Length: 240
Image 1 (cartoon, rainbow, N blue to C red):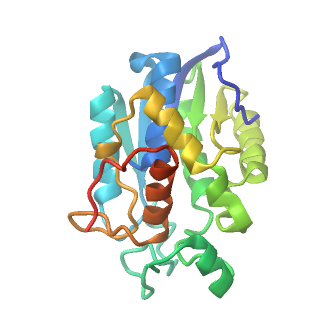
Image 2 (image 1 turned 60 degrees about the vertical axis):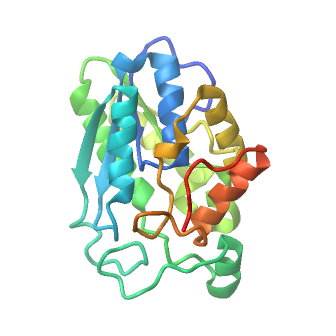
């Protein structure tokens, strides 16, 4: 069952956070540490053949910052046949402009990685059940309403996460429970919660492009910048 409550169930002993090294997942990590304590939280990231390693580097850095154990799972063979723009082998270019413009032009963003959240959640649930076979674990996903808007990323929607949550709970004897604290909130609200928790956003990486600094013009950079502006603060990372 997908849970969005503010208090972790008393029977839940551990938390495993899906971490991309970006704003949303790092805010989830801060939430999990706040609720469960640093000793009971771990993070997991995924190599799936993406075009750069900056997000994996950021995920490792924020895990070290919070003092939690960090795992990396390799899913590249599953995504080998996809030509979406986030893949290192893709013939497509990352578009620079808003998600809304991409939806208007093409119907969906070419940065959609086929069923990525479903695949990652399944792998993370198996990892959680393996790490904590005798205790329960909350599995945190940082999906938020802006990503699901207009069905841009359907695997971020409340309907998708609700169904995945039920499958994960059922398939793990109820020991692994999906937590999606931001699924009905926008990115500005995610940042607001992170600012309250003192999230080190300067360590995070959101940009679809690699390089020394984020581009500032791809859709995820634009959304990130706007989310900080909505909270009256400047994004702490510097852009090209």
